Length: 174
Image (cartoon, rainbow, N blue to C red):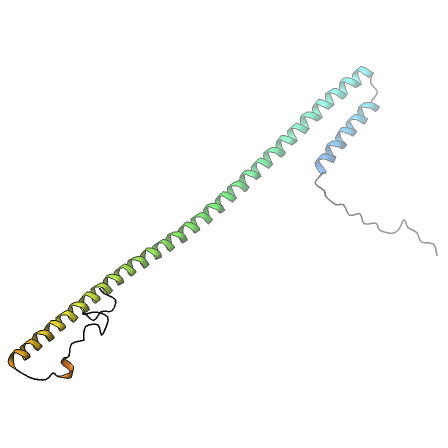
C-alpha cells in the first residue's frame, strides 16, 4: 500500500521573531542586486546602477530606522509619563496618610496635656481639701480643749505623725 504524499495537506507554522523588517530589507537588497546583475547593460552602467540602488536602499533603511527610533522614543516618553503619574499618585497617598497620622498624634498630645492638667487640678483640689480638713480638725480640737471637754470621738482623731509617711499624711509628697 503505497501512500501518495502529494495529496496530503501540509501545514506550515511560522514563528514571528520580530525580524520581519530586517528580512524584508535583506530581500530587497538581494533582489535589487540580482536584477542589476542580470540586466543587459555595460559594466559601468551596472556599477552606477548598483551604487544608485544602494544609496536608495540606504536612504530607505535610514528612513525606517528614523521612524522606528521615533516610535521607540514616543513609547519611552509615554512609559515615563505613566510611571511619573503613578509615582505622583503614590507620593500623594503617602503624604496624605502621613498627614493623617501627624494629626492623630497631635490630637493625642493635646488630649494627654488636657487630661494631665485636669488631674493636676484635681490633685491640688484634693490637697487643699485635706489641708482644710486638718485645719478644721485642729480648730475643733483646740476649741474642745479650751472648753474643758474630755475625751475624743473616734472619728475626730487626726492621723498621727509618721503613720502614713509624714506629718501631712502623704507618703510621696515631701
